Length: 166
Image 1 (cartoon, rainbow, N blue to C red):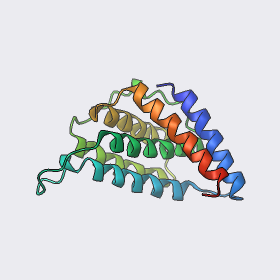
Image 2: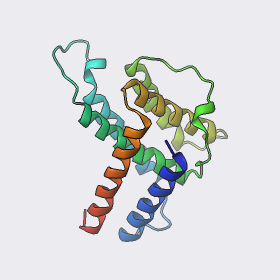
Image 3: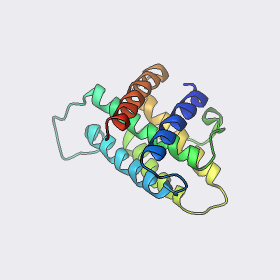
Image 4: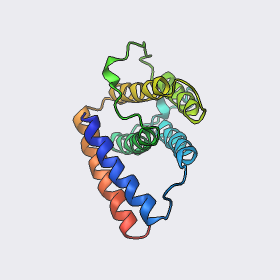
């Protein structure tokens, strides 16, 4: 995936939203972190076969899973822009990550929580979230091309929503 391109596109959407909603100069990081956590929860619901051991017969809808994954990606990129952390190379991370979807989702939800605190190592924490999220996409069977195409499609929808008073 071309992360620089995605950050640039997300920056355009963020600018449009803050301008249209009169939010210039406001710290929206807490809302974005909560929104990402909610979106990760929605993604978890779409892959509940990975963690609802008490429930049988759930079948994943791959299209819906990708849509929820991309909704998360919008907020991850937006948070990176707010933190001014857009130069992170997620492919150089050496941290071992589980191959279990449940563990990765759980780690992501917890990792996102660390981004709201004033810590000396926000770059490391954000990089871990970005790396884990990228790995989750791989575990879910998505290619970089699929993710980028779905992101671009949803970004267009998000721009259209803003124009139409969403």
